[in-house]
Structures are given as structure tokens and as C-alpha cells.
Length: 422
Image (tube, rainbow, N blue to C red; front, top):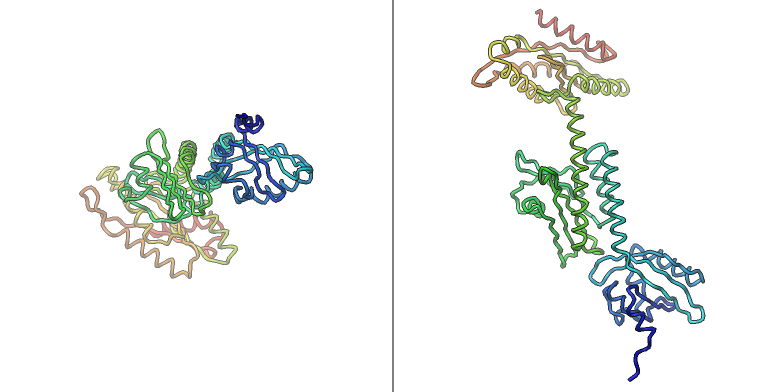
């Protein structure tokens, strides 16, 4: 019995795949390695057009490269993506040339999926680290991360859920699929990731929809979950995708943690430690912004300067702990009296300020001042003590009583002391 020809036998032993394509783009020969790379047997590929197997986003430039090769220009390092029989996307590097006499295109395909994965992962880690330094806040950081991850794994929907251990809920600083805060006990995939501490991959074969969630781990435990969902059906999630996302999740958790720490430091620098109200620096900054807007738009704004009467007596008689609780309750009541667009600040001690923007006439300022007096006059029930406190309020309105912050503060302060003397 004659042995098989040596050349086909040698080609079938190659790790790279050898393909021959006719002028119409149909496979006429496939070596055995194609099944390892693409998942299809030679019999399943021969006679079919090669473009059918190319990842849709790469088809146009693949056809352009094929036309260049058929014009007599060999292409030694062309890269594109093919869709494996099991739905995976594989990265291929081709070396191809054209035989004019045979009217055939000869190409050798090398699977570089793992090399590209390592390259993309390394690049993603670098870009995530860079985003942690350049993003303004957690939401902006998550937007950057979404774009980075979408280049690694299709992420039509992208969600970052962070745990709030104090009330066992989830906060969503970023999500392209808006959803309400969920209790951690609810039966959701995100809750499962948090409870198990493991990545979860769900393939909905009937719907061609995949969901993948990984825990965001820090040295203190699970801080939340990063979840992606693919709705396109073009690309199914795999165990390799799960491992990849799990690998980069540590860097993502570190980046989010860094941005949270920066936000916390910034918050502390601009807010009163006791009441969490804007401190003098932040209040003045907001006042200047509102003043510029009022000047530009021809609006009125009002400054209220508040001073608690006999607050020293509260501290001396009941202790500073009770006094601190009174100040915290004072801040809470003031916030209930104004709009979200207004600003309440603590200047220090028992002095507070209120900035009212877009004031509609002098009577509005009087209404708010009366509302504050009534709110503060209600008894404070603190640590078993029932305290009654009143407040002196000075008012200054822009532009009638001043055109800059210094003038308005002087006017409001003078008005407040006049009220105290009365």
C-alpha cells in the first residue's frame, strides 16, 4: 500500500493552519490545524466563503486586504478576528500571497488569541491605573473603565454596584442599565456574587444574552460587584472571559477605592466635621458662583446669618456632647427649611449661614426666615433633656444691600447683631 503524500502529511502536523482560497474567496484546501484554531473540520469549511467565518466588525478590512494580495502584494502580518465554532472570537495573524497562474490565494494562519489577550490585559491595567489619576470622580472613573472593558469583552450593559454595609444595600455609582438600590438579601445575580465572593457567569442560550459578574475585592473584603451583559448575540461570554474580568477586577477595585478616598478627603476639607455642612471655604466658593450667576442673569439672592441665643449656656449646663447634638439637629432642621438649590453652611461655633438663590421678591426671604425661626423654636429632645433655643437672623439681599460677598456678609452680620440687641 502506498503511503500518503508527504507534503499534506507535513502540513497536517503544523501548529499553524494552511488555507487555500480561490478567486471567489472560497476555501479549496484546509489543513488539519484549522479544526484546532477555528473549531471546524476541513470538510465543514471547504467550499464555503472565508468571509463567513470572519468576525463581522473585521470583514470590510479583511476583504480590502484580500484584494490587495490578489493584486500581487503579499501580506505577511495581517491580523483579524474569526468566530470559533463554539462562539468564541479568536485572533489570527495571517501570512498570505497570491498565485496568479493558479488563481489561488495561499495563507498561513497563526492563532495569537492568547498573545492578544495578554497584550490587551496589560494595556487595560495601565489605562485603568491612569484613569484612577485623571478621572474627576467615581462616576467618571467607571465611564473610563466601561470603555476599557468593552474593548476586552463586549459590554452592552455595564454596572458597578458598591456595598453599603451600614444598611445592607447596594449603591450604583454607574450603570448603563439603570436600576434601583437593592437589598443584599434579594435573589439577584449581583447579590449572589457578593454572598459567594466568586465570579458568576450566566449564559442564556435561548435569548443569546450573557451576564457576567465579578467581585471587587479589597484587603478589607468585597466592596462591590462589576457586572457586564452582552445583548448583541454576536459574542458569547466564556470561562476565559470570566478569568480575564476577574483578573482586572482587582485593579478596578483599587482604582475605585483610590477615587473614593480622594473624594472623602476632598469632602472633609470642605465640610464641617460635626454637622457635615459646607464649611466657610466651600460656602464662600458657592456664594461667589451664585453671585456671578445672579449678576449675569439679573437675579436676586439673599444671605441669612444665624446665631443661636445662649448656646454657651447649653454647653456649660449640659456638656459639650449635648451641645454637639444640638448643633447637628440644628443643621438638619435648617436643611429642611430650604430648597436643594440653596446652601446651608456652618461658619463655626453656633453661627450658621444660608444662601438663597433666585429669590423672588423680598417677601420670600422673610418667609424662609420665619420658617427657620419656627423650626429652631421647636423643643430639642436630646439625651433625656428637653431644650428650647431661639435664633437671631440677619439678612442681606443682592443687589439692594451689597454687590459683593464682603459687603453682603457685613450687612447680614450687622443686621443679625441688631436683631440680638433688640
